[in-house]
Image (cartoon, rainbow, N blue to C red):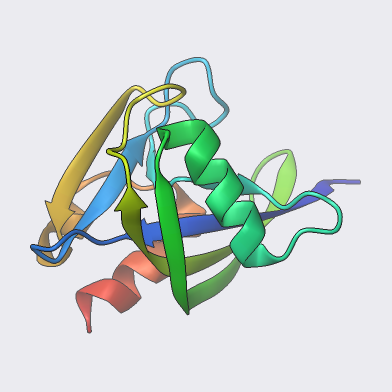
Length: 130
């Protein structure tokens, strides 16, 4: 039986309306795919708390979490991922690469030019059509 994993992702927008994309490193599962930064929800955490903690750990900055963007369940080869994405803004610090291979700010209408992890694609489509 496949494992179910529930994760949250932050659609972090800057003052120019660009969105932060994070490239998964060769050491991660799903290497070399772009994704919205985030991670697993720990027991007892709200989605917002999980997202703030994950972004602090992964990118070293503090965010505020806004409205929900998309809720997608995607079945990968070994795992079923439920990804909930939320709009977010950085309130303190600048994103730094720790786990990912690269971070890139990208205009919403250019999001489709990157190779995204499959679970992130419905959120990309929604953002591009806003």
